[in-house]
Length: 354
Ligand SMILES: Nc1ncnc2c1ncn2[C@@H]1O[C@H](COP(=O)(O)OP(=O)(O)OP(=O)(O)O)[C@@H](O)[C@H]1O
Ligand SMILES: [Mg+2]
Image 1 (cartoon, rainbow, N blue to C red):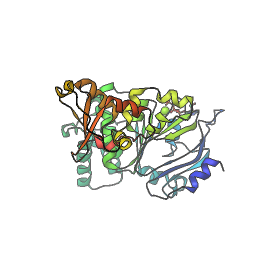
Image 2 (spheres, helix red, strand yellow):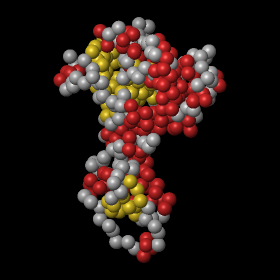
Image 3 (cartoon, rainbow, N blue to C red):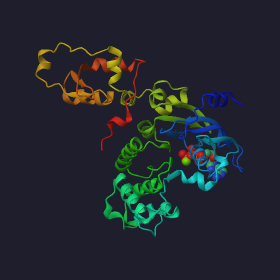
Image 4 (tube, helix red, strand yellow):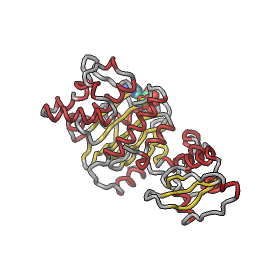
């Protein structure tokens, strides 16, 4: 038993929604080296975990072992208290939605038929299917006039939304997503990333999300598993990954020296926490001529910087979620926070509005 394995085992909380990878390895028969090599990690209930790493690092292989498209050569995967090997493939896959880059919609079926494939297989009542499809269409931001369209009458981004709706159809506990947005243009990708965040904040499901796009990983993840040559190199929150990379590989991968990236992960709350209540600073004559913009204490430091620069003000007024004035912050505060170790990660779900 390796150290990491026993450590995870000891700290294991038997929660129904949690996923545990226990020293999981996969060696394909034709290959000399392992595609996945001794990976142990624990995914907490409701977390969105990103597998991040270069091409060939084992991300897809690790993901496919969760719904048993691949079987591990050694090690175990648990969902809650159940070793997935002990479940029938059908029972296992019923609780898992799967979204891939090449959506895989059935071309001869309408949007409605595509989304309802699994509920129909599960023999749901017609009314129940209809209301589920309508709800999912709404949830994924598609108009109901699309119900009778065929996949080739949709854009790539719209097809991807249908793919997501289909994966959510039978209300799975877990969603596996393998580079789902990789083929989209930048605008559609960003839109769908925001949609996914909104969905995740609302639905509270475990999502395992594969990407090699660092920005995407930092935006979406509660925790990021960095993989290289099949091995788990670091498993941490975005902010810890960026500020405390374990080695030069992670440092380079996540761009520890990228200041804007760092700022975008840190909440203004960090400044309040570090300083106690912010003081109202003396306002200069020049400053008195400029209106001081207000920013929310949950916003990130990158937004604060951009507001400082665009408004020409020396200060921003900080308000908390109740609209209470928290005092002023300046560029100097941002500078100080960059070298601080008291950073508070911005809350993903706070930015999401309905
Ligand atoms: N079915 C297979 N048979 C043999 N080798 C495989 C198979 N699937 C993957 N591999 C090998 O396993 C390693 C990991 O592949 P995997 O697809 O998991 O990487 P990845 O991190 O998802 O890469 P990418 O970012 O390119 O999708 C690679 O060396 C790959 O060639
Ligand atoms: Mg892959």
